[in-house]
Length: 403
Ligand SMILES: *Cc1c(COP(=O)(O)O)cnc(C)c1O
Image (cartoon, rainbow, N blue to C red; front, top):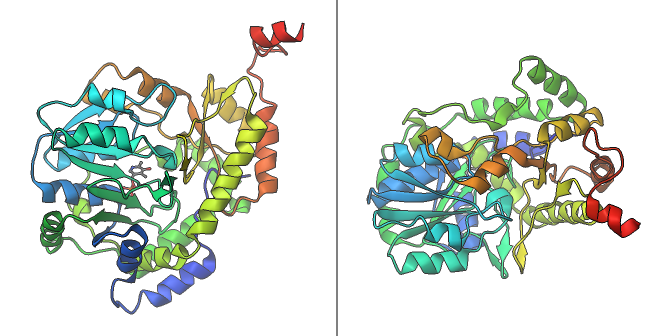
């Protein structure tokens, strides 16, 4: 079975990191990221959400934080845990991201921070939105958790705002197991974050981190994956590791620094970032070419002059469950992210586009270890998909044009 994702590290990376992380030397990963992004300050945490938590605490201007409604629930939860109020903005009609229109409608006099998310690694329209924020004096933060290496107008996404968060979770562009970074050029913010980090809890030990990633490496292997997948289905937890269940993460977890093991694991793969992204883009181009014109699947739109990092290739499909089962029977597993609309957890109505995305989006796999031949198989299966009860007529317009 083709897994929905596969960690980007190889066995050799895991063993090398185990060895390397035994000598707690200087922070080479932080230096490498500072160099890559051209920023002065880099802080490494256990997760991207922890980086955001630290940033909000360090900023210390409690008020409203605007976040997109189509999002990982961990983000609004972390905003609340940091003592701020969440202000949701809908995503665009043909986008998985917030737009300047949806942002403008929800900026309030209480807004102190705006989070610009590059969902799935597809860049959002930062420039228009930053203009809106600048005139109001709010802090602009990019959520580039999924967008390591993504570019807009030739510049790395994450270089446009006051601060940026990145993730090295095993499902992201570079898998470090767990891991997140906070980047900023703001000296005041940086010293406040440094202060907070003095009270941080202790990171995961290298053996703990190694054992967990070795287990994932085995679970996500093509041979073992079918059994793992079946097990989850029998337990009725088919959505697997993509639904965040907790509604109140222990605050200890929100102050955890990155483990030495994860730092070494990410650092070892940073040299391959270019080929990693290149491969993801090749697969996305293949999906686009082969599935264009498939009347039952809507392909993602990408901003002009941008190069996404494609942690998955999101599709909009009417009957997502049926499509998921159909692909599953053909040995292809799909991503479900995210099956909920965050405002629901806050008893808020509205946000029609986020709601629609939560019901209809699935993701095709794009990881570097997926060969093009396997991606072609994915295209063939997806291209032949017809909803149940639909014999041959895709849509009335096609019927007309062929008659
Ligand atoms: C994965 C992800 C996060 C959370 O990252 P963690 O490292 O798991 O905290 C936040 N935002 C976006 C857009 C993500 O894709």
